[in-house]
Image 1 (cartoon, helix red, strand yellow):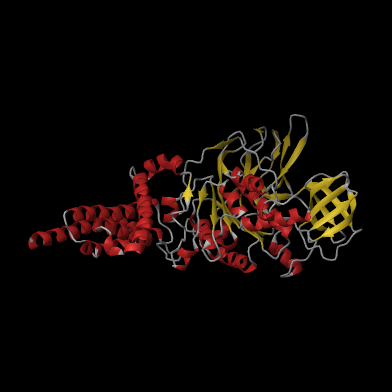
Image 2 (cartoon, rainbow, N blue to C red):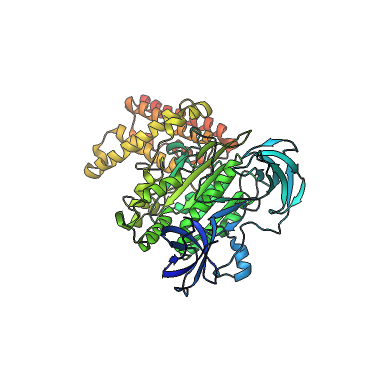
Length: 591
């Protein structure tokens, strides 16, 4: 254990000397208050340390002690439903000790030592096991069965395994390794947060993660194991989008990282998530959620660590074979923490003062997502889907963090303040957003939804693009100067925007739309469009066509409960044919 002395203090950065025998990324304890820090640079016997707590009152000469271990997180039963700070300390336990304000130097393990868990073995004495094998289970919540896995780097024969009640530090099994060593396994294991957990093989992300949000599922889907960015200015609905994804997206576990956001916003998350009812299970959403809360007024270095803490927890549940959705809100605050530490280290700045390695750091974070074949004899498929919110200043996505993120992710959900001000939510701009997973998932949609799904999607995008061009013409020459067919296009595009893309997150039916219902709604919109277009060619009046009462029924279709959609679809389809047929009949009568 290396001991040194502080030579210089610059905010969260401390320079200590006498640290020759320390390693990069070792965790250190600073001063008599034992503040937690991490070595981020070494020069001879001098170590640059980023401190995860407030450094006021700490001066030169104070002791620094290296633990010899990297920054690690405890992984085991007790994570689900927990609320942790950026370095994995449980905030509820800290509050019991220090009240509502965080005290410095508080040392509390991530997992409760006094909590007793009921362990059920899956393996037996004499079984040969290797890294990643599940040797037993713990029912962590009513929803999540926690698989107890052999830690990475350990393999051998089970010499002893016990059933019963244990805390996270008691031995549940003994493994005899090939070199003769006997290793006791507990319910808990530790893992360094800056190192990605290994797996056998990365698989192609070719299955969509259904979210129930029409604009996402139809136009800009994300694959299971994919990565997405949600950039948007203040007030454009980033947090509501992430809440909707946390609640409805097709995932078993949710890890939500509040990284550097305003304290009031994180408070809303902490208050709302326990009250949200998981629609799949009927229990509180917290029964399958881990929250990392690291507000903008907390020490800047801890903000940088919180991203790695969150994704390490997500990888751990991925290794159990679960589908994990990770929400990072927001990576811009994390990048700002990198910029502050880089400037204090006097590194050469890149664009807008961000460090030159910003792009590689962002890429290394998102690369830890994916659909993988896990380690172990009977390997499982695990999924980690990462969705990062980006908060560009003034909504300008040409700034470095947004651009570095866009070079890495394959889905871009661009939130638009103009749409938000019009009360159109989700405020995803359909002209600038994109998904690069669509082609890889085309076969899945054709097989599992409908053979015409991709064709309908292409027509929808084409109509919205044509609407944008026609609106520019209308602004110049007026509505009367364009053809009846173009007027019909504008009306149908308006129907797509208002009836299909607009979605009410607070309506009990409209908040979630299954793919089947999305498909039927698209069919109704295009059924009206095709019939009206045919009627126009026969000389029918555009004014009569766009004022048909069936259009209002199509708009209300999204509020129809799922069990009634088939009957309502047939009813509306017949009414489209009937009302357009009536117009044709009245025209023939006039002639």
